[in-house]
Image (cartoon, rainbow, N blue to C red; front, side):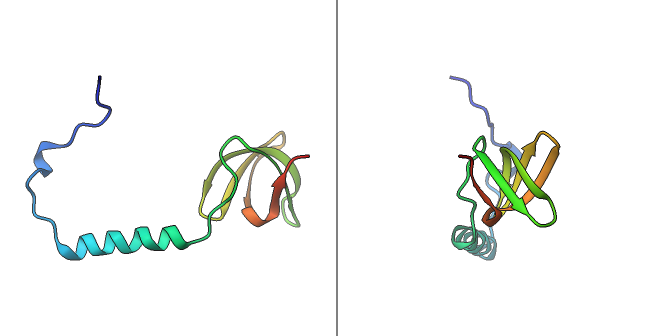
Length: 87
């Protein structure tokens, strides 16, 4: 089996600060409790927004509450609260 990731030998054995570990754990905890989109990449959705208008398309990516929607007219960014599944 081939490994996709090989650890850099220069970083092995390097000391790690406790504050760095705590900061990383805090960032992960905040990200876990923050708003997330209920739609997955590839879901067909309808976006209705006063600025972007009504667009039907496929979810291409999402980061936090923002969703990138690929439609026939182009790529649009919506808040996940402005989306609903296609009928």
